Amino acid sequence: MIRILVLGHGGYAEGVKSNLAMLVGQPESMYFLDLTPTDDLADLEKKVTDLLEGFGSDQVLFACDLMGASPFRVAAIQTYNHPGNYITVAGLNTMAYLELGMASDLTLSELVDRAIETTKNSVIKYPE
Image (spheres, rainbow, N blue to C red):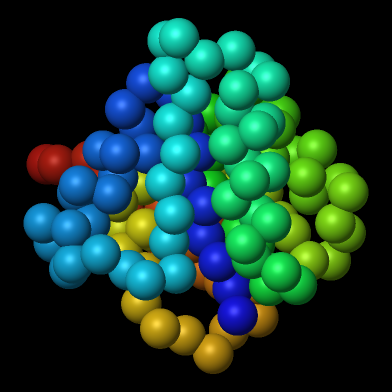
Protein backbone atom coordinates (compact mmCIF):
# COMPACT_ATOMS: atom_id res chain seq x y z
CA MET A 1 0.00 0.00 0.00
CA ILE A 2 1.12 3.56 -0.70
CA ARG A 3 0.55 6.09 2.06
CA ILE A 4 0.65 9.83 1.36
CA LEU A 5 1.84 12.13 4.13
CA VAL A 6 1.22 15.84 3.58
CA LEU A 7 3.61 18.03 5.60
CA GLY A 8 3.78 21.79 5.88
CA HIS A 9 3.99 24.94 7.93
CA GLY A 10 1.21 26.42 10.03
CA GLY A 11 -2.10 25.08 8.74
CA TYR A 12 -0.87 23.92 5.33
CA ALA A 13 -1.55 20.20 5.81
CA GLU A 14 -4.87 20.80 7.56
CA GLY A 15 -5.78 23.21 4.76
CA VAL A 16 -5.10 20.55 2.12
CA LYS A 17 -7.14 18.08 4.18
CA SER A 18 -10.06 20.52 4.45
CA ASN A 19 -9.83 21.38 0.75
CA LEU A 20 -9.94 17.72 -0.29
CA ALA A 21 -12.78 16.95 2.13
CA MET A 22 -14.86 19.68 0.52
CA LEU A 23 -14.10 18.53 -3.03
CA VAL A 24 -14.00 14.73 -2.87
CA GLY A 25 -14.12 13.60 0.75
CA GLN A 26 -11.29 12.33 2.95
CA PRO A 27 -8.90 10.02 1.05
CA GLU A 28 -8.19 7.05 3.31
CA SER A 29 -4.51 6.71 2.43
CA MET A 30 -3.62 10.36 3.10
CA TYR A 31 -2.33 11.77 6.38
CA PHE A 32 -1.73 15.40 7.34
CA LEU A 33 0.85 16.88 9.72
CA ASP A 34 1.72 20.51 10.31
CA LEU A 35 4.74 22.17 11.84
CA THR A 36 3.01 24.56 14.25
CA PRO A 37 4.45 27.80 15.65
CA THR A 38 5.01 26.07 19.01
CA ASP A 39 6.80 23.04 17.48
CA ASP A 40 10.52 22.73 17.02
CA LEU A 41 12.17 20.38 14.56
CA ALA A 42 12.34 17.58 17.15
CA ASP A 43 8.57 17.83 17.67
CA LEU A 44 7.92 17.45 13.95
CA GLU A 45 10.38 14.57 13.67
CA LYS A 46 8.56 12.79 16.52
CA LYS A 47 5.14 13.33 14.93
CA VAL A 48 6.42 11.89 11.65
CA THR A 49 8.24 8.96 13.26
CA ASP A 50 5.21 8.05 15.39
CA LEU A 51 2.95 8.06 12.34
CA LEU A 52 5.40 6.06 10.21
CA GLU A 53 5.66 3.34 12.85
CA GLY A 54 2.03 2.45 12.15
CA PHE A 55 2.68 2.09 8.42
CA GLY A 56 4.89 -1.00 8.69
CA SER A 57 6.56 -1.74 5.36
CA ASP A 58 4.13 0.38 3.29
CA GLN A 59 5.57 2.81 0.78
CA VAL A 60 5.31 6.50 1.64
CA LEU A 61 5.04 9.61 -0.48
CA PHE A 62 5.87 12.75 1.48
CA ALA A 63 4.19 15.80 -0.07
CA CYS A 64 5.69 18.95 1.44
CA ASP A 65 4.77 22.59 1.03
CA LEU A 66 8.26 24.03 0.40
CA MET A 67 11.47 22.53 -0.90
CA GLY A 68 14.31 22.76 1.60
CA ALA A 69 12.25 23.92 4.61
CA SER A 70 11.94 22.00 7.90
CA PRO A 71 9.06 19.68 6.90
CA PHE A 72 10.89 18.87 3.67
CA ARG A 73 14.14 18.18 5.54
CA VAL A 74 12.38 15.81 7.97
CA ALA A 75 10.79 13.98 5.02
CA ALA A 76 14.05 13.90 3.06
CA ILE A 77 15.89 12.31 5.98
CA GLN A 78 13.23 9.62 6.23
CA THR A 79 13.43 9.11 2.46
CA TYR A 80 17.21 8.82 2.63
CA ASN A 81 16.88 6.20 5.39
CA HIS A 82 14.31 4.18 3.40
CA PRO A 83 15.64 4.16 -0.19
CA GLY A 84 13.18 2.86 -2.75
CA ASN A 85 10.34 2.76 -0.22
CA TYR A 86 9.87 6.50 0.45
CA ILE A 87 9.88 9.49 -1.92
CA THR A 88 9.65 13.19 -1.06
CA VAL A 89 8.17 15.88 -3.30
CA ALA A 90 7.43 19.56 -2.69
CA GLY A 91 5.19 22.22 -4.20
CA LEU A 92 2.18 20.21 -5.37
CA ASN A 93 -1.14 21.94 -5.98
CA THR A 94 -4.77 20.98 -5.37
CA MET A 95 -5.14 19.20 -8.73
CA ALA A 96 -2.22 16.94 -7.84
CA TYR A 97 -3.63 16.22 -4.37
CA LEU A 98 -6.97 15.29 -5.96
CA GLU A 99 -5.20 12.76 -8.18
CA LEU A 100 -3.14 11.42 -5.29
CA GLY A 101 -6.34 10.82 -3.34
CA MET A 102 -7.83 8.63 -6.06
CA ALA A 103 -7.27 4.88 -6.02
CA SER A 104 -4.53 3.91 -8.43
CA ASP A 105 -2.47 0.93 -9.48
CA LEU A 106 0.59 3.09 -10.16
CA THR A 107 3.92 2.44 -8.51
CA LEU A 108 5.20 4.96 -5.97
CA SER A 109 7.56 6.49 -8.52
CA GLU A 110 4.85 6.68 -11.20
CA LEU A 111 2.46 8.28 -8.71
CA VAL A 112 5.03 10.98 -7.86
CA ASP A 113 5.72 11.63 -11.54
CA ARG A 114 1.99 11.96 -12.24
CA ALA A 115 1.51 14.40 -9.35
CA ILE A 116 4.38 16.57 -10.57
CA GLU A 117 3.08 16.57 -14.16
CA THR A 118 -0.44 17.38 -12.97
CA THR A 119 0.87 20.36 -11.02
CA LYS A 120 2.82 21.61 -14.04
CA ASN A 121 -0.09 21.13 -16.43
CA SER A 122 -2.74 22.70 -14.21
CA VAL A 123 -1.04 26.08 -13.81
CA ILE A 124 -2.49 28.49 -16.35
CA LYS A 125 -2.65 32.16 -17.20
CA TYR A 126 -6.05 33.60 -18.01
CA PRO A 127 -6.60 35.21 -20.38
CA GLU A 128 -3.82 33.81 -22.49
